[in-house]
Image (cartoon, rainbow, N blue to C red; front, side, top):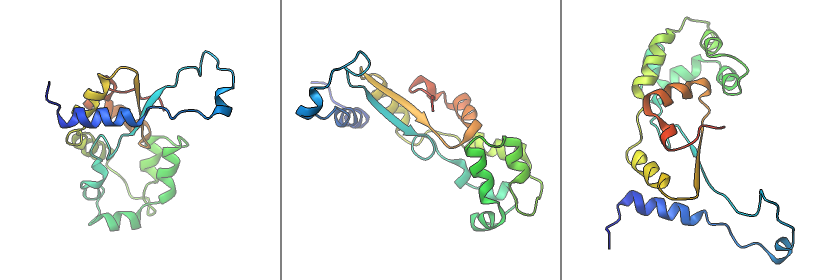
Length: 166
């Protein structure tokens, strides 16, 4: 018998957990349509700090000219990133409005810090590969990083393992 890797064991356990629960009698009497006759097994992954290291928490405060993360959080406008997450403002507008005192942001340095910091969390690339090999499991990514997900994709090619539809 082939020896399983830890990633294979975790992947198989994850897929087993996704097996649909039996429907109650009342629900099984409902007429099935083509779209709902076969239950789908779907895994949704949050990208940052689940699959990929979030470089925001690895020194971006220094790139933004702050002594600490605490100083950064005191100096920024909290509503600005929320608006960016919702697609209400562009990335350029995010950085123009980021600080309450309207200081300039070296956007190129911030983006470089982010891109340089994007790496798979240890073991996640292998786990995604194991799950990808299991037939009938759909994997999707979601992230609140707005358009920055494109930089993650360019560097790590997550789409080899999952779909970015979100």
